[in-house]
Length: 289
Image (cartoon, rainbow, N blue to C red):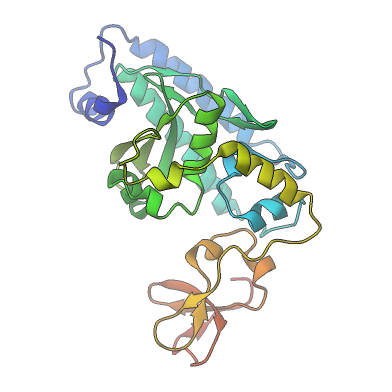
């Protein structure tokens, strides 16, 4: 009897606890393939970064208009640090590891990096697990909760839903899912969407046209007018001060869009204030922090 993603997390946990490999799976062959893919991944990540200005990608259609516009037109963002590149590399490695564990647990992985097109815009899917189109996400413990508790539709700053919806649309499908990995404690979660389920809590987040969005973005990047900022500043408590929205804090274009935002070092992390009515009783951080 073929497996389905419903038992995926349980099966991987049992695999790690018992070390029992299904008889139809060759541990040696899977491990050899994993080693080759690790080598290829490192080789790719050590190449000079590709200039993707002048092109749209399906993976980005759920991101805010201004961010997409800036990337398309080659607007320079923040220069990435070595530590950030290592973080990205680590994420890719972890995702390959998780897919290998999927295979070792007796589930089927297929269509990895298959090209997808909508309106001439290209993307590459992560692949399928047991025939279901999916994406693997390595997350912080905070981000992981969105997948574990099915709240991704309430706050999807990185456009994960639109990305996978676009891949599914290109395949003529309405069902897809995410295999999320909490990189801080090793937990896994499987979240699956079915667009035909009108009673699902996420239905509003998927009830829109991918083709319309793609055409909208084609027109957007052809304009001379820069779109408005993605997120307005939010109140910083009751002080009257305003700070950048969390999505802006982690955006490559933070300093481009908000050159006058001032960084302050609070105990809970850095806040970037755009309006200061009451001077914070914490240290102001150097420019470019």
